[in-house]
Image 1: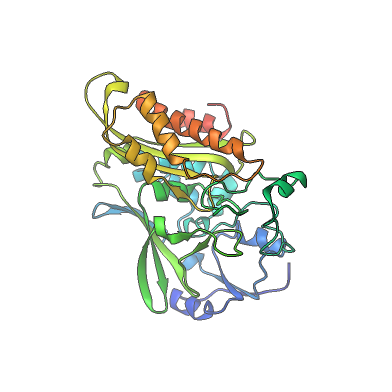
Image 2: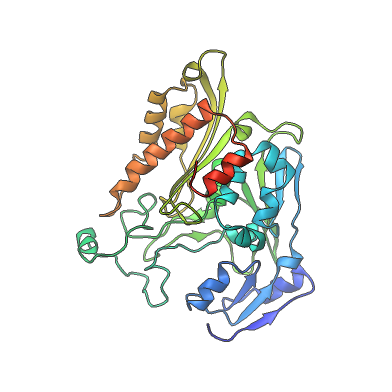
Length: 355
C-alpha cells in the first residue's frame, strides 16, 4: 500500500469538491477498497471519508423501498420492510459475507465491488492479458473459476462478484447518484456496462466525482409488498459452505394464480437475474418471458433456464457453469412454487451450507 492522505469533510458538497480527480477515492465501509489498496490494485493519493455523510435510512415511500447508500448490509437485512416482505433481498445480503463485514460494508460500496478473478485483480496484469486463444488458456492451467460466460463478447473477462446487486437488478431497482451538477437516477439494469475493447471487467455509468446516494426498488405499499417481491428467493452456489463468492446465484420472484395444484398454477409475474456467471449482474428478460403466462411446471422452469443461458459463450474450463446455472434456476423456481418463504432458522442453515 502506498502512502495516502485521509480527509473527513464536513459535508457531502465539500467531499464532492475533492472527488473530481481520478487519484481521489471515496471511503465508505472500506471492506473492499482497503483490500485493493493493500494489493496495490488501487493506489489513490487521497481517501475522502463519506460514510458519516450519507443517509442510512430504510423506508417505504410512494410505493418504493428507499435505501440510503450509507446503510450497512447488516442494518438493511434486519430492517422491518426487508425482514417481513422481501426474502430474496435479505437472503442476498446475509449470504454475501460474514457478520463482521456486513456490519461495516455500506450498500453504496457493495454495488461497486471489483471482480474476484485472480488474474484481473492483480496489479501487474495488463488490460489485454489472457486474451489469446481459449485452448491456450486451458493448456496454461489458468484458474477459470471467475471468468464470465455471459456478457463476455467471446473474450476473457472477470465476473461481477456481488450478491445484493443481483437482487437489485432482478427486481428493477434504481440507483440515485449525486454529483456537482445535481442528482440523477439510473436503472440498476443500465448502471453496469459490460466490458468493451481491452476492458477485463465491468464499468458503471458513474461519472467522475459522482457518488451513489440512494437505492430504490418498487415494492407496492408499505403495508403490503407486491406478490412477486414477497414470493422471492435468492439461491447461491459456492465453492465452500460459508462466505465465498458465488459460482452461480439466482435471484427469482414468482407471482402465481389459481387454486389448482402448484404445478398447474399460472405464473402471472416473474423476476429473474443471474449472478456469478456474467461480467455484470445479469437480468434475464428471456427467462421471464418464458415464465409469464405459463403453468408453473418443471417443464416451464426448464424452458426458462434454457432461454436464460442461450447466449452463453463459456471459455474453455467454464462449460460446467452453464449447466450449474440452469439447474440452480430450476431449483430456485421449484422452491418458490413448492416451499414458500424461508424462516430465519433455515436461512442461517443456508448461510453455512446446511440447507
